[in-house]
Every structure is written in C-alpha cells, then in structure tokens.
Image (cartoon, rainbow, N blue to C red; front, side, top):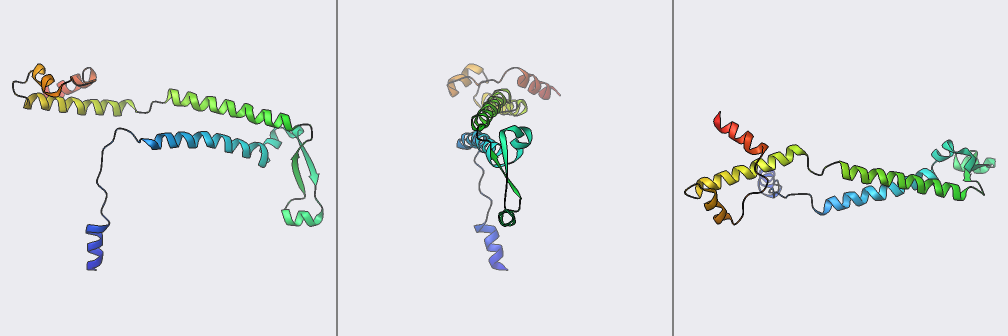
Length: 170
C-alpha cells in the first residue's frame, strides 16, 4: 500500500508542461506520412487489390486456377494485368497520384495552421502582458516601456485591444 502511494506521488508523476509555439519536427513528420500514404494507398489500389479491376475490367485478365490451387488460395481464379494493359494501369496510377497530391497541396494552402480563435487568444495574452508591463514600468508611458523592452508588442491592436477595453470599462 505505501509503495503504491510512494510510486504515485514521486515516481509516476505527470511531466511538467513546457509551452511551445508549435509542434516542431512532428509537423514535418506528419506531412511526410501524408505524402507517403498517397503513394502506398495508390499502389495497393492499382496493383494488389481488386478495386481497380472493378472500375476498369478491360485492363485485367482472369486466370482460372486448378482445384488444388483453389483450395490453397481460397479462390478459383486470379486477376492479373492484361499483357497489353501494363502501361495503362501505370498511367492510371500516376494520374490518380498527381490528382491526389494536388488536392493535398491545395488543402495545405487553404487550411491555416493556427485557427483564428487561437491567434486571438495569443494576441490577447501578449496584450495583457504588455499592459501589465506598462503598469509596472513606472510612469505608465508607452515610450518608457518601449525603452525597457526594446521593442513594441506585435499584433496587439485592433480587435483584441477593443475587446480588452470593453472588458475594463464594464
């Protein structure tokens, strides 16, 4: 019993939180996995599954199996690429690949990495820190704070300042 209390209290504690601006290397890895999944899924679709055969049966040939081979494989026939259709299957695969990669790139461009609500919250936090630093800088002037910090705060004005001012007045 006491060993469980000790283990839960000191050994298996929740790790401390370190705030970061983004997920770092994981973003690149996830994008790489997405790109690789396009290639692997298309390879499976075109060469190993029977899905392409259902959409374009003229590109494939059905070879019947003997009774002994049918017992081993669980099917009485095999689908193979027709002798003259190898180039057509490869072209179909490459065309689909380019279309899907184009759609992936469009999605990466259209979908923002940070949602507007998160951007607003980060700007609000930066504005609050800036306002606190003005109050503690003595004199309360923006010039004194700018001299203390070395720079003016980024993206603090606009909607965030308006919302913050409304909150202060109420």
